[in-house]
Image 1 (cartoon, rainbow, N blue to C red):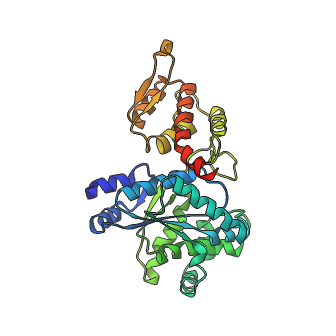
Image 2: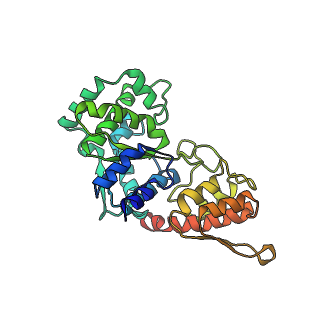
Image 3: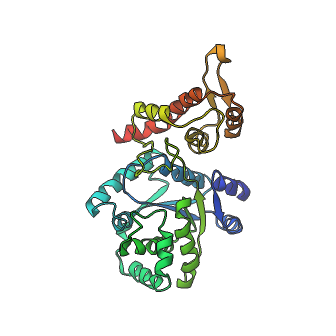
Length: 320
């Protein structure tokens, strides 16, 4: 790939790059920059998580070295369970990620507690804590913290630790959903004061659950990677998908962020009396057809079930 092709691949389907200029300079001067995502081991892996997995796969194709942080200490601080519970979930998460394409041969998996309890790490956390106000730490956790109307001190340490993760893992590019933006901006502003480099930050969208709200474990509106084929079909059948409506349409989002990134084309199957099967070679083609009401919601949902189950079959095979 040329540097321009690498940049295009890295920026595919993202909401924001902070900053474009820094990413361009990085890719032109570093053949294998380090990119990471940190995941709290706190529940089942759903399609919201898979969106950042897809981005890591894009980064691998662009020549990046990929690091996956299984952030067990963060999950513990954010009241997601005991250490024993969190570590058990971390192992499950790792197996899911490998089945989704992040093989151990080309991905570095790191357990947070393997280095986050060491003296160098903790000293840097304490140093950074001297430069961050309580108000700033609280605001940075607004979208990722649990019960932030009355936060624990541990939850205010969380964003500082995440910034130090970026430093200690020697990360060039930090990837996360848009809900991670405030924490990433905290890292960009404060790491340089401790003598560390400033990361490029890439933010992916937050996709909708089948009820139209943010997909999350706490909302119980998600499609999990270990759902059975029947579960996927049932959830897709119930999902909001109004004829011609693109906005906040979870089915269209699944095509845009999960199906088309893994398929060169998709086929909507229809009876001959309704025109027969139609193949679309890009998401843009499908979106235009659906907006023009040339694709019926039920036909769209049927295709979504088919392709989504094909994507998830390898995960089920590993976990069952």
